[in-house]
Length: 403
Image 1 (cartoon, rainbow, N blue to C red):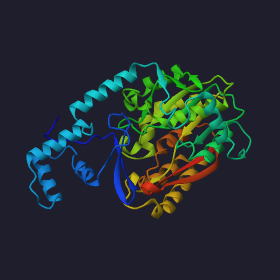
Image 2 (image 1 turned 60 degrees about the horizontal axis):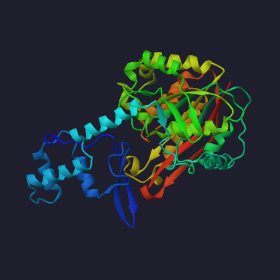
Image 3 (image 1 turned 120 degrees about the horizontal axis):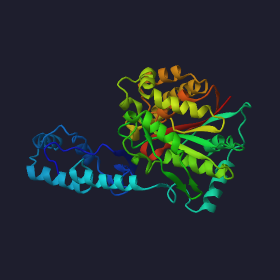
Image 4 (image 1 turned 60 degrees about the vertical axis):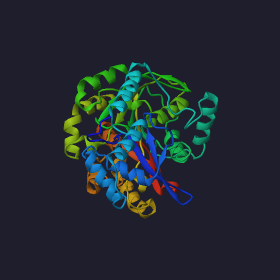
């Protein structure tokens, strides 16, 4: 364990939950090394926030003494605390890195991307899953929108039951289509680096297997290796593509189609300047290949995205109830520019607020706007889910694009 400048892992998510008047900080580890549903006291979380890789052991001693009102904290106590954190895989240590390396190598060697959420977020038995999807689809009437060839669909990736009405609106629009290829733009929630993550794996769900378009993925990898992650590990547990795929497999059960699965990373951390111009300059060749593919009449683009994430769970210092009016206005402005295929307006609205409301689907929708053939979007639904336990909220929408 590196005790010189100990650092907490950057790939963990922490969010507060209130239960019986007590606040617990929950830990989400997509690697699965930290015990599932692990919670810690706010006092320990405060200590962990000090572990940013810049403080020495002596610095930590002083910080802990200040936090505890001047009580003497020995070197042994600090070492014991760090050892406990390391044993729980909470530190970015050699022990953690070795385990991560094994997990990544194991996934990279696999030819199949096995479904990660069957039995957790949806039934793992085919018949039961089809019944669940039919129930979701039946929760809304068939949406109306202008005639024309459907070029793209925007759908949520939130929990299926939470978003059932909006999922229904999105995927009822897909009925009757017979695409040969579907470009699925998802959100790389676990991507620490890279603008995009690609995989050549075959995807398997309880509804069967779907092949990846090897030719397009190879072209994308060759054209823009500097902006693509070095491995495909971000796909292992990511639900934003998986949720779209089960709907597509169910609705297009008699259609043979391939997919181009693309996870989009968070652009504010990937671009030297958060602007459309820089995005285009870095991803130009990558976007060009996708643009050519999207023009093919046998291709449909699906973006699996959610919108604003507000409240303490997502880093705000106030409950979502005090923020959602502003975040909804922001969402609706983004959706307005999206449906008008106005990429400049879409970027300007995000830049105006510096992504204050954590629109996780921004990168996927920015990509969609760059690759769509001339189309007009039609908003089919918009909702906000309020999570009382964390005093937080997530918004999501459905839209269809036609030409």
